[in-house]
Length: 316
Image (tube, rainbow, N blue to C red; front, top):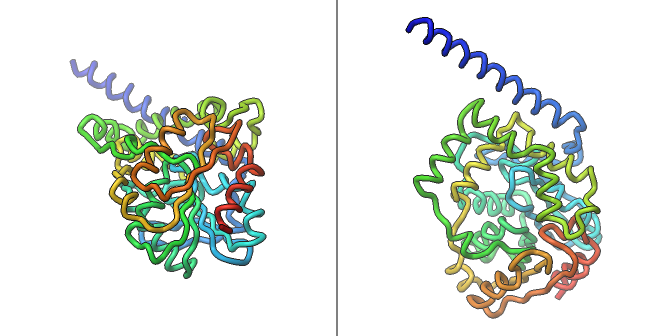
């Protein structure tokens, strides 16, 4: 019996060491290309961690908020930020838990990101910006505007998240999943398996691009690197997303907000017209436009077409 216990402990130890080595190798290899440089940006020393951001251009301020995903970053705006900067002061940030920003071990709540947007606007921008946000970051922009309406101007959302998805809340089963992802070593392995280069490429082919054969390899590499900076610490954001801590029911806010809201939907994005109609049903003053032959990230796939709509909304 003692021998069996000893062998089990030895095997467990060797397995743990092996998994740790695999995690470390992934962390090192994924960032070798150093695509997410920090030399052209700054860090906002926020109370929950340092938040990376860039600032460019002159004119009325515009704040760009990328999609909420452990592999996402402000790189999402790479193809349009310089064009917007011709007429605006453009701020692009990596949300806490993403990209070049810190990825602390904590539960990431919806209100945390609302606070981040509000504090960043007050401390760094110092003026009322227009906000452009993507997908699962929809609720952060709208809730920030709902809480501090005098600190923001227009809200533009690209492919807004379905209202029913945003209304989902944590439960026992989801908290169990969060527990396992948050585990040291083994949870990191789960995270690394979820964010392989192949899985990110598959997501782009299936969900993000309408024409999958046009996805640049650099985009895949950049998202892969963003997912694995800080030794897999992005798992804490992933576990919070999967367990619905980043969600909130925004229907009350939608009804209340008086700021101009514009929604841009990609026709290739499943059920996008139904989703946008649901937003308008709660706030009839919302305006909407649609893009052909694009999916979830038109800012990367069809930036010129998206810019036409953005410039129309920003200068209306």
